[in-house]
Length: 569
Image 1: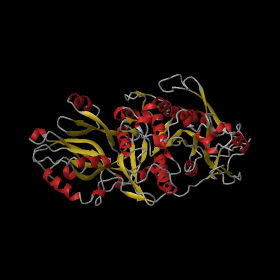
Image 2: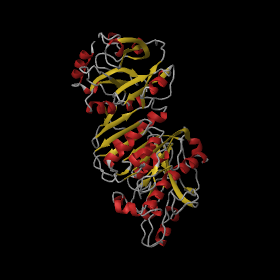
Image 3: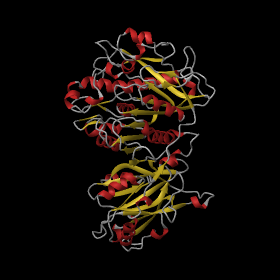
């Protein structure tokens, strides 16, 4: 097949774009979960609330001062000896903690977790809101957990909210019902800054109170890291959670906090200087709902969101296209800079958590976390996640950014690494380590993208899963383009074009199924884009498992040729 024929075939494929993409399925929302849920004790004493005169319980949950007096939930607890507490030591770093450096700050924690169906502990009706904390742990008793180690999920609520505020409590319970031990600190943000959600987009307010805003932001990952310590050392929860499967979920500023916790540096000056915050390598995957990534005048993660370059774990963001508090453009910018696996789902929602959003949010969150944390009860999570495009029902939603970084190699696998040459605007890939010093010396730059192949291959017992030789051809030796072409199709090895020289087999990969350009269940489609520069004798191709990367290439004039091989995640 000549490159002219390849281009013609690619143009025909444009009518069927779904054949090229991995994320092409609309899935049903998950149900209410397999587990009954119980939560730790947060019972409040009406007499203590009344003692403060005219103050609403939510003021204590959220840490709002009243008449110049500090308020926090620890002041109104009926059973403080049963409730989970942290006396958080704050590092003596005044560029982060303006008012509390070197001091200790109390943090109350609520944990919602799967519980045996035999648990008869009553629910607790919260004052003011009337929401119910299910099967709340009675005073003086231990939590009633099931006999299986489950993943721990940190939960960071929105700015000036609390884990038991409407919406947040329901999310905790829903996530626990999916099989997570969910631990959420009461951040008590107004103790550090009186900034409110409506102030976040106000440049004058943020700039005037920026040192306090930084302290508020930096305090959150510090508290979340302490919650992990608390849970792993707890007499009951320490044996109920799997220390190798720890994830994090954050809403709004909680989304920012979990990115800081997983490596993102924080903007700590009006000149956009960067600083490390508390970081916890025990957290292995993170989800952000309408995550706050700053404003155009002051990004959350340093100049040009460069602080996100340090995030080390897979991240799924869910952003609102109608959100003016956490603008989706700032979120896109941050997510695109994450070097680990990163995804963005865009929903037509404002900066709110409404009951009608729950199905979409829990479905995306649980599928992603099960895929990247590994859930023995859900072994097909990764197969589903790499096909998910949207969730049926609820708000309109669609995955708009998808970049998967391969898992650790097994069974002879190696990463096929991608490189880019800015002078000639070409892409190249290799699985061979000896190639790398040569191409780096020639001006090629790593893009950070890769997919899996095999250096060698043992045929499986099932012929349908057999791998194919991936050949490489080069054009420059025979008067063709100064470019390499890769293919797993025997009809393209060698190319039926006198301008190409067959260099040989360079790795192995699964062939796509015909018709339909399908891959075996659990495999990613490797897609091919063509720069359409045959007339200039400058043909080049790019290979990627990322749908969003292919859409980006199409926007700059490349042709999407479809799926050409299959790769293990």
